[in-house]
Length: 447
Image 1 (cartoon, helix red, strand yellow):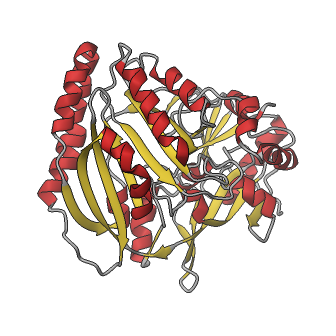
Image 2 (cartoon, rainbow, N blue to C red):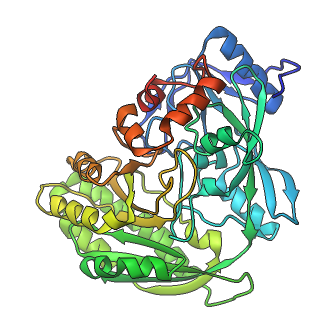
């Protein structure tokens, strides 16, 4: 560890109102600090610790859960961004914690590298993405945090702690998905892979057929992503397979990309959801219309361009990871509940899969997972589907995505995570005075 050697004055505001991207979380921090460098961050933390002020760091605000909500000091790491080190031989890149994924991905490609896996949204910062366990899809792949081989934490007293598999290994096992409860990540070292392209095949299918063949599908393809439209049997299936960086394949024409991603997936879909807000009872018919706009397509593109898509229609989301063997019963039960209740869900349910990892609070800790994500337009009531979905996955050892809606507290989480109390021990050591806390963190970790 090292301690701050000087106190500087960062950009500070007070009385600000913060709202997340999904418009479902709002807070009024007593103070908002945007440190210009690590030294300013360290000095800010030391002052807050001395004064007993709780601190929460915030990234892009793309979490639907209140992970960044605070009435204390809110830290924004906008200036802690960009590449700080590059090891070409080891294919490792160190980046500032506030680097957004949509900036990181093209920067890695310029170095001839890529992250092994990504989610379908790239607005998050790298530290926010790993701290909440953001993942992609692919049974032979893991979430983004599994690419982290080292990181640096700024602790409550302003000292810095570097950790890796060899240095402070227990801190490393905890901090890669740390919920912002151990300290503030200042930089992340990533194990990258050579830049690669992905052959994408997207097609519509019947949900019953998809469920019957899912075991074979997820093992046959590098990445499988599915979008089932409630109130219909229609599923958009995406089979994405890694190919070499020099594989040209068939490029998606610019007009088709604009039509699918801008006009249909965002413009038309926003209109559909606004209509649904005014007339919720016609949502089943609207879902049929939306499903019919889907068409098959096949193309090859840079990995990050294929994985990530623009998402401008705002929503709220609950996502749970369940054991792979529970995928079919969970989806079947969810469909039965929706079909038997007066609920309006214009958004698709997203279905994905990842392999096991060794990170203590990762949803994939020591098990292969299927992910089921229920969405609702931000202007619509969920109609009870979130509570019903939680009840379904509770019977299948469902683990909630840390950045998305859920109601689980420490007692329930302890039963789902074998290393839960080990995480708490690391936290007791690094933050005994609970500087990095909030009502939500206390609910999760059982203070």
